[in-house]
Length: 125
Image (cartoon, rainbow, N blue to C red; front, side, top):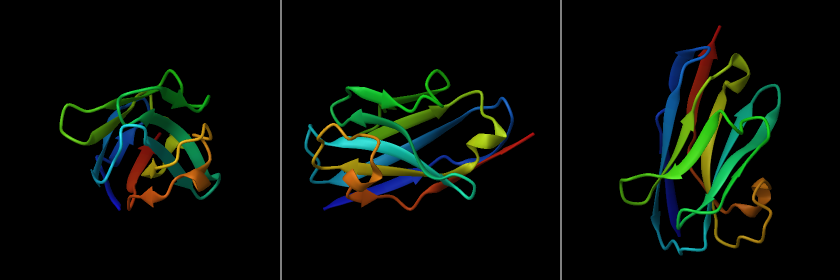
């Protein structure tokens, strides 16, 4: 069992930044994959980024590469997602999830077994 909790969401103006935190606990192995997804009312569920639990490798959706950065946090069992140059189109509920059987399908939400409750990110013009 893996328990996942996200935090750090909020409301910002376009061009601003936020840092989201994902704390995962339980039986987590080094080869597990930690991913970020987002759900909006217009686009549904989208892959954002992923990272190996041991700190690598990393993967990004083309829409966010260069603006967002995923990394292992300094705090224990923490993965960070830094959101930069935010636009209104980034408004969504952001979810952290854990894939316990990584097989290369890092962008497929069906590959992730454990999900957090989500944290809201709202970007205004």
